[in-house]
Length: 264
Image (cartoon, rainbow, N blue to C red):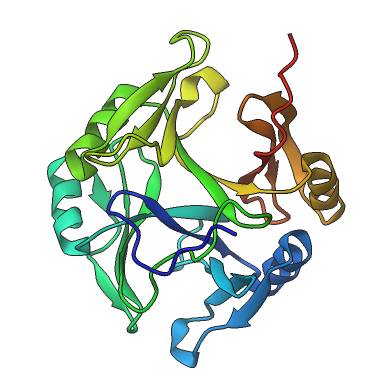
């Protein structure tokens, strides 16, 4: 069981959480879909819930921020040694902060920002909460990727902020995609896709959750109120599909152990 108890390296997707209108409804849906045990936070946590999987923190669920209308969305958080230092780099590189870094009780320091293409993401400086304690397991996140309408600009931005390097994949025409790695590392920790090739209207981060058996999990998600957006597809990386949850939040399901050859 892949687990982690220490802080994630800077620049690594380290946590995901969901902002929704109806927290109770989301709690029921994801408990049934992934088998999460979901706990209430302390009274001063603003209604934030902690989802546990096999005794390890897997994800968060909470109400939406502020009064302005916003869609229900999964947010990817990138690890930072210093949230304040990364905030300065984001501003200098052309990104925008929704607000300055702030302490979250005694568990960490964070903020939410967008890159120049407008894709929101979080930054997390860990303290008591180091981020995801389980990954690549059924019901845990396994991959995070940026779908951007400004592919080269977004790659340049994150290189300036986190020092990412890239490995290109696809043919560069029908599929423009790259994995990103932290400075001095070779293994990719996430991906960046050219969203224009998919006809997507906006830039965003997509969270993929590992499942054991894609078809059964997809069927279950739909029975619980999700709608299928893409797939199921067989790929060299696993059998996958993208769905919208009952409150419109988009996420991916992938069985990375099913390496069926894609259709010819």
